Image (cartoon, rainbow, N blue to C red; front, side, top):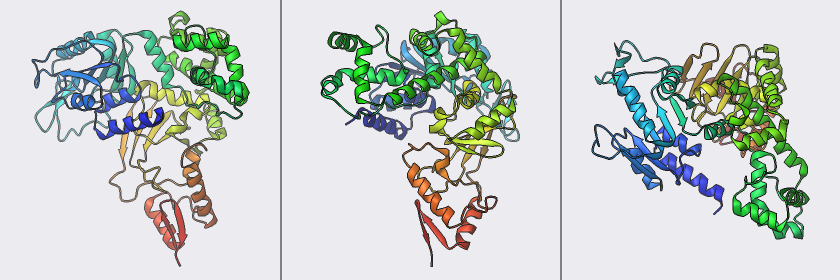
Length: 486
């Protein structure tokens, strides 16, 4: 079984086991692994602990109400999940946060309820800086920025948002910056082997770690960046990384490696542009691997920052943003916005990736979102949820989360109960050609165009309008297969 298959099955198991959102994100973002220890501070009945143990994670927990006798132990990853919300006394909130941080060796996960369309004041009573729920329990609702400010001030850190109301707090600044870069890293796969000569075949297993490194970083490693045993074998057998890479180029397309290097240089631009919103690290404060990336792609840190800053500041010009959206070969551009599938975000022009980053750097990304809407006429990013995107030929919008980049107001809209929700057409336009179902989507669109189904754009944008159109044309669509009913 391949490594990729094992990873996918493990992710599926995580979803099946109903692990809480913050912990699930920590696993998906490779913060929590089976090599790290996990402690749930305020674990309630211990549901996450049991489910994680079942999946092979080293997990323990403590709760002041349900399990107060358990010993609190230092762990690599500590979770303070939705605990701050239920503590009435502000000083006790600070104390809980500090005690959880004291137990943290690597990363503290902090999550709390945030204000997204504030609770209905008719059914919930104001109490202190929170509310009293219908169950007569205290619940504090934070603004996203308020929660970050609270964490940062109490712990004297720079907490990183990974979702609404979910923050990672890193002990090590190098690990924090590496995580920031990974957040904006675009996907890439190693070029396939085209002509495997005998010499390449003899060394193929030896060269695999070098190919993996170049795919991730877009450059050759410097001394001690590869695992010691891999580096030693390559240098002993071939002489240098450069000579080893020449063997790889003999069996693969050099242009594909150049494209990976270019993609990685863009990732660095996006990362550095968005460090403007925090205190930008000095060059010697960056992790060594990022310093080597910058030297390889830009020469100097100053040049790299200037490139990123020019792109960031250009977002203040509506015409620049509009032009970037219209020129984009990926996504569906309308008069007011560019819509792109979540999987294609890394393929966009760096200016558009930075634009989205202005939202995700403050709020993380909406878990489970399908499409990202990049608005042109106002500074707003929306995350749209189409859970049936892959299986339904014309999926309905279930919900959206919008973030206004000037007011930082978060608005959530629910479409799940609407009898006539908006639906999608031309699904292939939202994704890249290498998306698994791209050809299937494109073939359906081709047939719909031939039958004249997509001509009345203003009428077919909702479920009822689309059903009416199909009925008038005597057409049925099952799965992604279309047929004319006689």
